Every structure is written in C-alpha cells, then in structure tokens.
Image 1 (tube, rainbow, N blue to C red):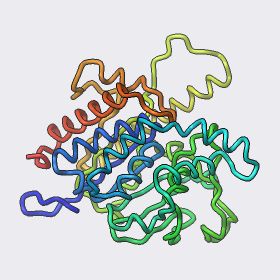
Image 2: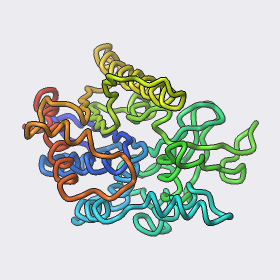
Image 3: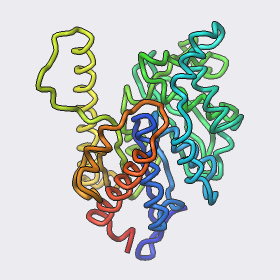
Image 4: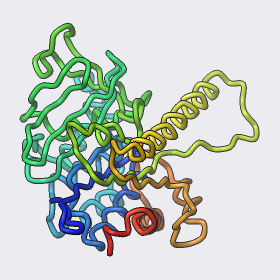
Length: 336
C-alpha cells in the first residue's frame, strides 16, 4: 500500500486523535480529502485513540470498500450511543458501562469481527491506557501481520480472536463516565499480574503518536497527525472548586503532552531518525476553508452523541482543508 516517489517506495502513517464523535467526524473529512488526492488507500499504518479508534477501526475493517466513508458518516449522524451504554451499565448488574459500550459497537459497527478480520487493511493500532503500569496498551492488527495486544513493559501476546468492538471500547472508555475495561489473565497471559485495567487511550497520549515513532517496529517515511481533541481554552474567571480545578489540571497536563509530542516528531525528523511529520489541530486557522471553521469545529461537543447535519459538514470541510494545506506546505511531493 506504499506510494512511489521518484522511483522509491515510501510509507505513510496516519494518526487519529481522540475527541468523541467530533473527532470521528473531523477524521472523516481527512479520509475524504486523502481519498480525493489518491492517498487514502496508500496508507500503511493507522494509530488511533478513542474517537479516532471508532473511525479508524471501521475504515480498516472495510478497507477499500466503495461505501465505507458514506456508511461511517451515516453512523455518526444517526446514532447516539452514550446514553444507551451508560443506562445499560447502570441497569444491568452483569455488565459494566464500558462492556455496554462494547456491545453497542458490536451491534452497530463491527459485529463479531475480531482483530484477525483486519488482516487485509493497513497495520492499525487501537491504543488504550493500562492503569496497572501507566503505559500505553495497544491492540495491533492488519498489514498481513500478527494480531497482538500488550505494551512495552509487560510484553505482547497474540490476540487473533479478540473482538474489535472490545478493543475500541477500551480505547474510548473515557473516565469517569466509563470505568476501565478489565482484561483477564486468560486473555493476556504475562508474568507478574492477574489482569490489566484499560482506560481511554487519551489518558496517556490523545494523539496516538507513540506507534509512529517506533522506527524499528514501524519504518515510516511520512506521518500525518489529525488532532481533533479538545484544545485548552482561556479561562478568564478560574474557579476555586476542587472538581473544576482538577479538570483544569488534567487539561493542562494533556496540553503539555500534546505539545511535547509535536516537538518530538519535529526533532526526530531533524535528527534523521524519524519520518517527515505533518500535524494539524482542530482549532487551527491556518488552511481553514471558511472563516470561523476553526471556532465552530472546536465548539462541537466531544461526547458520543450523533452529529447534526451542520456539524458534520463543517467538521468534514475543516479536516479536509487542514490536511490538504499541510500536505501542500510540507510534503507537496505526495500530491503533485
């Protein structure tokens, strides 16, 4: 699936951030623009977090199908899974809210498909956070490679039969709305622990950049980082409420990680140790198609709630415009 530039084979990675259905809609705009430019089906690797996992896993499962983007858009504009999954977890004593979330993904998006059903698409990482070790925990499949799950500290095991719906639920189990997803020793058999507890991948890295930087495992020439997460907002009247201060502190920490990841990509490439990187954030005005698209897109809720027609329209337009501008400015050889 690589692309040929000046007679040489080049590999492209695409990172899809978290941010609920807003992120999925924004990434859909990126997909549509990349398809228009003849690049979408040349992607070699997807690294996905939370809302990005919803979109990325669906794309990979239906790789190169003519109606995959239309079907994804239909899902995002007709389904609101948040309320149903929360209530299902509250009312059902045998199923947590996160397990109920996985059930909705199974019913509406992925069926009983497993990681091995992603074989024919690009290599894809569905990233979560392991609360036992504090590390990024990934489910990885596709690219005609092994289907695996694990992390760098505890190790990686093969997981061909693990359901996509559960991997996406683990990646999008945003606290405190959704409790961690527990993976037992029977499924993840590594020394020293009896189970792992997985939370939203955005707790560790909301951009999903880490797999893009593993040059020994994933040798990439270009990476595109689509960031639809919640930008940190100026607060003219900060509160003394403990809960609100905690929320602001988490936002500041995530903003620091976000900035460091971008710098990491930049300096790795300058040092000749990493791919050429193109990143853009939903609040960016540089390249926006229409005035105020950045503000409107950034103001849309990050909940798992269906997108209104005007919301999906602006998100698609803005995501497509930003990725085109970055490609044109930084890697024009990909679109010439």
